[in-house]
Length: 117
Image (cartoon, rainbow, N blue to C red; front, side):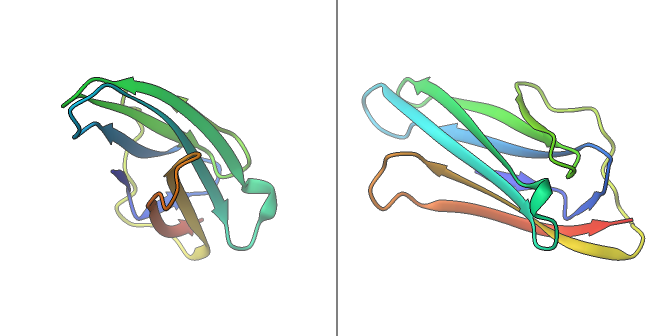
């Protein structure tokens, strides 16, 4: 699962939730890749890796925290930043994708929204 608020403000922290779940019957190791970018600013791009081992029926969460100025990281707890419910003028579109690395035909999870002033 990958989710996040539809609006982000440039220069202020934004957070996107990633949840990995093992629905299988055996323990599984996953290497997840997370990529974020803005349509108009290639300098804001980030790539992160998350490796996790999940027992059957187990789930783990991480949050991607970024300022959309090129700084990003994974945190284990939900960040305390407030959600932006209304924003200024949209100035760009943000995108975040998550996928299992080294998996054939792995699904890509994708969320997108607006970057506002």
